[in-house]
Length: 453
Image (cartoon, rainbow, N blue to C red; front, side, top):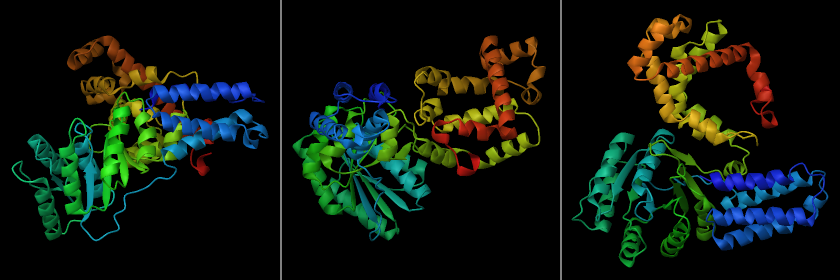
């Protein structure tokens, strides 16, 4: 999400960063570029007008004029106003109520409500140690009920059965009784949707909401929906007392306008962002971090948190001890690293959170490290004998031919992998000798823990 918007805003920021003095023409040109970038990203016009006006007011004041680095001061203003539009503060779910706490998901068909219900359940079970029940009141689409039942089993949530012959509000009341009997902490209600807003759907949503009296009412919206997202957000906000928004499909080819518009239209915070199809692909929405990502500054904090969550600590410790003892980084270690990268969403997900210098083409790096490429590399390693993985230097021409045939690849693919392994082995060797400290010092802002800088 935000690829095009981020590129345009980063360029606008780069044009003024480092300037010793900013003229009215510089500021006017930068604001024009920002306005065009936002409109092309499908940000609602009233939101764009407010955003530009707030930046202009601050830019022509003393804040920029008296700064020793006016270009950087302007970028700081743009960042601050982006944070305001995105919601300023991170708002977590409020579960401080008599259990079962009811979470009500509303939105149009195709927005990803059912998958989001399962993702949310998994997060509450794994991170908050809650007992969660899922129920679908989508009596118009039996496949949605079956889908949620399957996903509930996958994430370890309890499922309350429902049938298309029942009334939606009756299902919801039965689910509440069932969740009380089974001493559930949270009940997530997945509601019906339509392709477009219609009176019947809205009336049904209102009845189910009235019968369950949810503690959290979350509007689930497709981040690729553009202006349709704004219209549906406005309609649901008028009907239901929304308490938050969940953006889905943020990993797709989205312009990102929905994120900047829906927050303003509903007046409610964005709570989570769906970043993939897997049930663990749900991230907490941090306005300040997202603003940094939009401006190409990266989001290293989220990356560190994701590494802590998804990287196998035992494997990491084993590798660290192995390297410390002077034993080399072999192909089995490379396979483990590739699997860890896939678990984190591949190179694209990682690069999205790293600050990108202006002369680096992220698309080229992402292409080299996409999931398909990782799978090909793992297949090649799987075709090797344990001895070949441990001692890559013994892999001669005939061995390469056998490995390539076994993996269904070409010899060039094997050569490419071996070259990549050699480069990583050299890097690991440097890191084991204290090179990590130098590398962290060289990152923007001298990132890394204080003891490592």
